[in-house]
Length: 191
Image 1: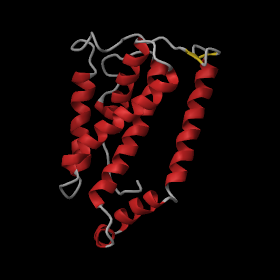
Image 2: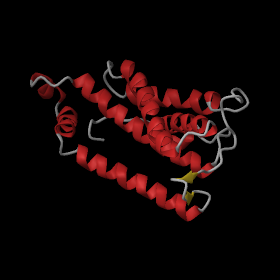
Image 3: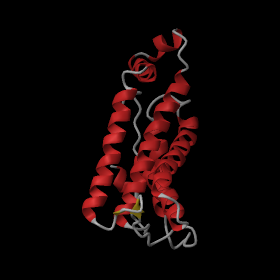
Image 4: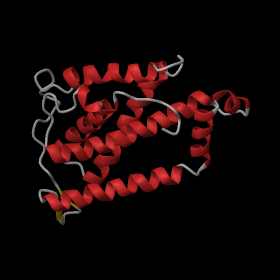
């Protein structure tokens, strides 16, 4: 990506977003609140996972995210262990009390709307100062640091943004599969 980082366990953040969305939807939250909250929670988890890994050189971030994906997919998102907090059935809701997401076409257009919004945000981020700093850190980390760029903060910001996008995708994926079951967010999905 723009920050030059590799994440092999990105689907773990999708699972975190789906977990958050499932619990909020089970408590009758509005979908326009659920989707951003799922993204924020996954972004926070991504930052927490990235904190220790970014201090070490090499591909340790990729290994750390892959190591996170294993327990998330096989243990934390396994209904046999956490049946009380993992809704196995999530009903699709009405959007703005008008659009029924049970209709596959409506769900498709809603997902397409979110995708276009994510692409617009990413394209807007790239030419901004934050985007240019991410690319500068990727291209020459020492030169960027010599210019006063906080390299670790920039890397964590990039990783948090990618985790937030994965969390939003998890909320949308939950609406498609309508529940969390064993293996839905497995490690192999990240590849």
